[in-house]
Length: 286
Image (cartoon, rainbow, N blue to C red; front, side, top):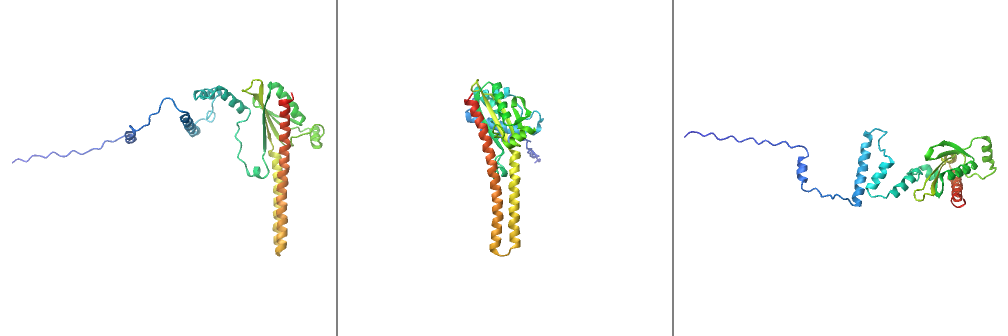
């Protein structure tokens, strides 16, 4: 009987699948249905995710265009997500007045000595030119002079450096000066979008130099107190003498820090009260 050739089994060749095809096939029938109109919480999630993607892509962009957007773009986007134009105008005006600036995290010196910036804002009756003139007259009486003119963003002031102003400041001749020496004040006046007859006034008083001087005084007292305590412990071997000297050194250190903190707090309160009194007069006594 002739032999019949058995057909050779065909080799099973596996098809090469593209990456992601398995995942796509597995999830093809399980994608959630998203309606064309989004709820408020969905809008927030989309915008939050878009902001994350924007921050991730910013390092690959040019520095001049990274994160830049015109006011018209901001207004258009806000209108598309359903925000009122009046709210956007108000927010932009507050941004121009510096009201939306993020506060810096509190440092060790902030907690020990006190803050280095005082901010006062008020909505007062306009027009802008009249309010700016009254601000210039007030700060001139406070022996301040223009340091930088920032245009629409405002004016940066500093204590006048002429001899007459220094003498008047030192001996409190004439009008009471509420602003301390070595300070810096930024003033800005922008229209109030909620009331066309009013403007937003903002004062930002920076006390970095005076506070640094207080901090150095406190540091000197702490070093002196520690030196007294260490010297007493090294010189005397009896327990009562060690305790007395160490206590005296600690008291000196704590007293110096407390005095520096108290003096800085008085400077801050006096400056803030002076600016608030002027804003009160600007709002009610014109």
